[in-house]
Image (tube, rainbow, N blue to C red; front, side, top):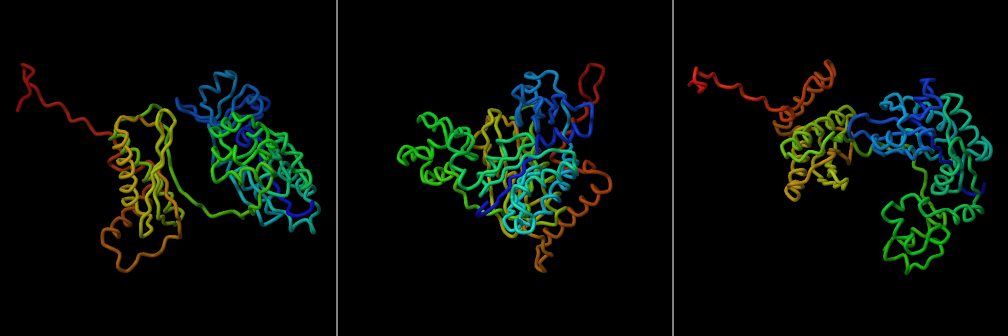
Length: 403
């Protein structure tokens, strides 16, 4: 293959496949990995259950309605992460240019490896073989001159597929595909394009910019380039963590403002504990808000100096939530999340740090030590606890309170 050689490796139904591998009783059966609560969502679906129209991000209740005989398994993220490390170790055996997209998906730039290890197709087959040999799991691989086409190619061959796309074959592969195969087009945008009578990537590539501009605006040229398989993005080796967050989907929508504030405090506390565990500080806090109708909002605020203090981040997150609630006072929320970003290594305290900051840091450190020893639920912010009901006053013979 001339030019760049990019692999997109995508594990097949990763979480579900791990569960089927570990429990022989699940092999060949429809398996759903996901939450089992009222608001549980499908995290992964085995190929056996996908035949019923079940897919990730679908409510578990709907998935079980479509396939009542499905087996629902709670996710084991820590276990999947350990298996993922085995898989990524295989990738790094072929190239240092590995860009992980998730636990089960990555781009590999093997251009510089071809001279020593053989053609890209041979490398792709070896990746698949070693992943299966070490984990008993299958992967689908797309090989192409760029990331966009490699990702589309890997999806076309699932499961356990290998699709090779040479530079001269890109247009022939893409042109007949439906526009929804173009990653990033979006579920809301695709119907607008289809309403113009444009249904394939070839038609999108050849359409006049004037027809598309009302939909894509200044991004029109870029969208048409992508439809033509043009993509010069590099494979960026494993990036540092960009955000640390915690979020919660409620079993029932919450409209009570005091309960929502308590949830934000709890989530900020959890996020800050994770931040300190990674020895990082943040300069930006984000609150994620999802209403009961699934409309999602984010509110963000940057601050200086960077911090990992629970008090500071909790205060900012609460302010962001309160400002949003003031604009929609009757809204009932399905989900809340608190995240921090613009991360950097935590530095030593400045000599002139105010005493309050020093006290806050000492308190955070003490809380972290207690939780490390006695468990994460050993301590919780007081504002997250349900208020205790005052005892009834003593009553006299007539039922009247006594003074």
